[in-house]
Structure formats: C-alpha cells, structure tokens
Image (cartoon, chains in turn purple, brown, blue):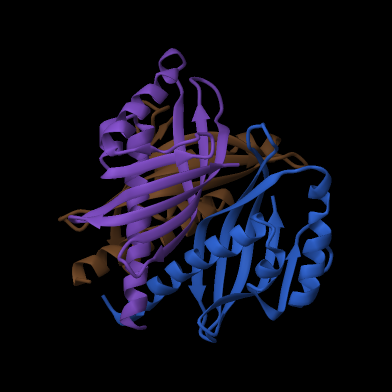
Length: 140
Length: 140
Length: 140
C-alpha cells in the first residue's frame, strides 16, 4: 500500500469523523458551535435559496432565524449523512459529496423522513482539524 | 501523517466494522451472538428504562423477552448506525457516539422509520476485537 | 499497528468510497456508468427475481428497462448503504455485506422509505479501482 493511499484513507476517515460532530451540533441546536465548523468566510446555500449565506457570522444569524420555527413545535431533527465521496484536491482543499437524509421526530410520534438532499462541500484544513469553506445543498 | 493519526483512523474503521456485524446479529435475531458482542459485565440501557440491564447473561434474557412481541407480528428490523463519532480514551477504552435510525418492514409493506436514537457506547478491546462494555440509547 | 491491520482498513475505506460513487451514478440515472462499475462478466440478482442478470451488457439492458417506470412518474431515488461489513478473502476478492435503505422523493412531496435490503457483494480489483463481480440483493 503506497503512502498516497494511506493519506487518502486518513482524509476519508477524518471527513466522516468531522461530519459526525458537525451535524450533531446542528441537531442539538448548538448553533454557534455549528457555525464554528465553517471557516470565517464560509458560505452555505441550498437549492431553495437564490443566494448563499456568506461568512460565519451571517450563517449564525441565518441559523437562529431558521430555528425559530421549532420553538412553537418541538421537533428533534437528525441529519444522516451517507455515501460520502471524498476527493482531495491538488490545492489542499477537499471536495466532499454525500447524501443527507434528514429525519424529524415529534414528541410521542414515530420519525419521519423530512428531506433527502445531496450535500456538496469544500472542506479545508485549519489548525488541527477540518472546516467547511462552502456547502451547497441540493434538495431532492 | 503521524502514527497517532494512523492509529486513530484504524480504530475508527474498526468501530464501523464492529457495528456492522454487531447490529446485523441483532436484526437477524441471533440474540446470543449479539449478547456476545458485549463484555461479560456489559450493560445496556435506554432512556425508556429506569435502570440499565447489567451483565451479558441478563442482557440475553432481556433480549429474548423483548423479541417475543415479534412472534405474533413478523417484522424485519434494521438498525442503521450513522454519524459515528469515535473518541479513543487515555485508559484504552473507546467512546463512540452515533445516530441509530431503526426501520421496520412488515411482509408486503414498505419500510417505516420506527425510532431515531443517539447511541452512547463505551467499547473495549478483548482478544482480537472490540466489545461493548456499556451502551446507553437516548430515544428521540 | 501491523501492516495487515492497515491494509484491511485501507480496503474498508476503499469500499465505502466505491459505494458512494457507484450508487450516485445509479441514482442519477447514469446507467452505462453504473453498469461500468461491474466487471464484464458481472452478475446482479435480487430475491424478487428467479435468475440473476449476467454480464455487464445485459445488466445495462435490464437497468434501462427497469427505469422506464420512472419516465411517467418523476421520482428521485437514493440508495443509502449503511452498516458495511468488509471481508477480504484469501483469493484477493472482497466480500462486502451492507444494508441498503432506498428512499424516493416525488416532486413537492416528502421522502419515503421505498425498500430495505441486505446487499451481498463480491468485489474485485481491476486496474486502479474496485468493481462489483456479483451483487445479490435480499429485499426485506
């Protein structure tokens, strides 16, 4: 096994680990911590928005606003990222594409699939870990 | 890539592999084999129970009892563990936290999401593999 | 950590990466590309068929025929492979068993779980990557 293979595998595992912590923060509504998994200039967009949100600070505002809908209606969301496809780039960034199956549970009810998406990320290394520089979510 | 990184990655992959076999045993109702993936003194609890079940022998009793509900109503359960977050500890144990999306299929019907959970495990190395020393399941 | 451990881990990660790209091709209806992830003599069967489809060419015919049902009814399918269990064999082939949760989304509707399956693959190394030599899908 070549060194290149080993490095690619290490990056793959790092991305899985990164996603697990990143999305649990969102699902647990630690919004500032979730925003902190993006770079300072990070951007986030979806196929339902005309323009992406730019910068970590504005992402946090966006998230706080978005989550107000759950105040009146308690619901536990879970983002299940599956089928992760990691492509390290020559410039040191990492392209990662995966499926997201978002489930919701209302108190006393059974879970429902809320949305199915394809997530397109550009991840970068900052300090001792990864951060999302840009995320574009295509909603099925 | 440092040796430490490589070891962490190896543990991560080992945990994914362990979960795949462990939970297929449960879903296929190989209850004794599933109980065998816990340590002798292993414990299992959920947010729906006041006290965890302690020891592998009592876990097996608990599982046999629990599965009686499926005798009258044939149903195939599947435990999908996603978003695995692995934290090797200094004492050699491994903390692992993940989501579990449990689906059920009744004969001739489409699958349903039955429950959404967060699984909190402490895994230990025994012989040539991993075992669960404790599992606490928070049901959403 | 021994070399053997490292190699097993590398194969595990390679299989996850392979599945992510393979199944996105199917879900995006790149049927020729998906068929190309099978070996020339590859075979594909399910518990709903009496005989597996043999050869890549016939698999492509089968897929084209199968997908005609979606012409009249637009639907986005997603294959979520989870709980991947990889067993490298002494002959160089790789046995891989996993769960597949297939979701569908109709325009404007919420996703539904369409089927739950156990996928039994034999993968082989060809050129610089993996290919599926045989796939048997047990539908729950």
